[in-house]
Image (cartoon, rainbow, N blue to C red; front, side, top):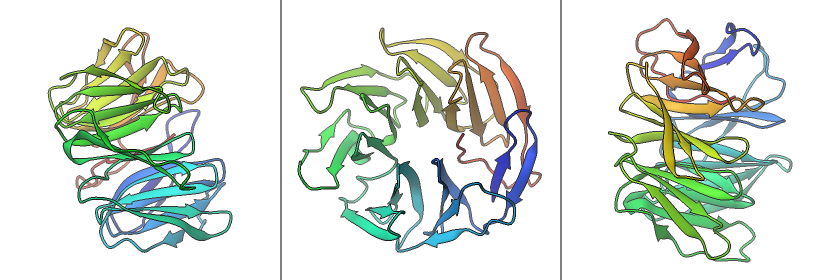
Length: 279
């Protein structure tokens, strides 16, 4: 099920029932995308309205783990160990990358390079043009559960609860780490708009705000009663962010006060766990 929320005041705008569990969401200027556990990606042209029909992108043989836009390109990561990149302007499958088993999970774009991470904390980076080849590298001997990029740095988090920042990857990169930042697996990581802070969320129910210049956590946000599966900064105001959790709630937080300033439950059914969201 796919929900759209009115921006100014929390309220339900519309619902689209896709019939399958949604594992990931992403938005661009022109599109919305939702990856599902039935191996399908649902794609909508903006503006999305209740009556807007989705286009299906198919081809994976196992469930979709993540979807990420980069301009007119849409990258998809799946449990079948394949990354697919679609050119939405040309309506074609641009690239198919077969990874080692369990080497791909969450994905992000670092400039025009596609990044993924997985087993053994191994990070793999691909040039779609084939002009550069990059050796995979490991940040720690744990499963890498999520990645993010601000086009300057790459953030990788693991099932040990740790956060790793790869700085200046294309030159002689440096690795900065915060070991055991969380007590349990980290589900989501996001950079602030200025790239000076990250948010991480975890199965321990907490959200951490980290100062990247000092590599120290500066605030913990508690209140969710279940795993916090997704977080995202407000695209205009870095002092606001949203989170969604297995406790069936979406919450709006203020990073200055550390308080939850709004919360709502978008679904009525108790089996509608919240896996993903996007601004």
